[in-house]
Length: 306
Ligand SMILES: Nc1ncnc2c1ncn2[C@@H]1O[C@H](COP(=O)(O)OP(=O)(O)OP(=O)(O)O)[C@@H](O)[C@H]1O
Image (cartoon, rainbow, N blue to C red; front, side, top):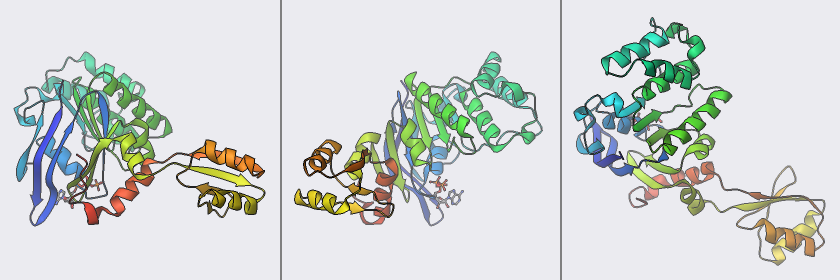
């Protein structure tokens, strides 16, 4: 099985350190979400893994080899970095055929990936007539052309319509299910939460977290309870009597942090508080991510979960 291994990787552009002593591994059989604010170093790291840039120091390898040392690299690693990369005057099918020919990939793969990406009906159109979402699908088709064990996608949901978002989610899950190594950068937290098993989070070029998605969320955000009543006074008394500090919201609902829906339901019922709504409020990746990156400057140096 093929992993991506990043060891003490550093990249400087003049005085700017885009990537700073990064060490992490991306393992097969799961989708790893690659997160971090703008300029955190995600694209630079991907470029270094793909041998498109040289590190100032450190290494990035795929299955133990540098990308440049791989024979027929598209058959090992598929990547989407820039959806504009296809030549606009070519049709999508010709673009993929040229890629297949120059990488000794059987030409039948062209129709397979076109189908996979939902592009078969428009495969004969010039790429310059494609929308952003169609280019994105073509970039993903190209990444899959060599049936690679490792897939790196930089913002694959960019420009996709709702159907495309559902498609990419299922595709990523399937690729991981087939035992492939899948690294996906994104700024969309709900999206990432829907497909990632594991997260690698960067801030200012440094590793902030390398942890399973569930643990990442639960270490930072406790689930709470959402409740609505016709008698806020009675609710408040019942909750504070049991040590709960409820927070009132403008639209009339309350949240009880760090509580279980069973306990709050029982408590309200025992106190005779009329309930209009009662639900568990799941902690979200977005909350956890903001919790981490908001305080990033204070603990970037020592808050490494890797
Ligand atoms: N070719 C380059 N020359 C100079 N600086 C660069 C170059 N490429 C990236 N940088 C700088 O390196 C830092 C990391 O950029 P990078 O694009 O890797 O971040 P990112 O996490 O992918 O950000 P985004 O989410 O905005 O895509 C930024 O400060 C950026 O300005």
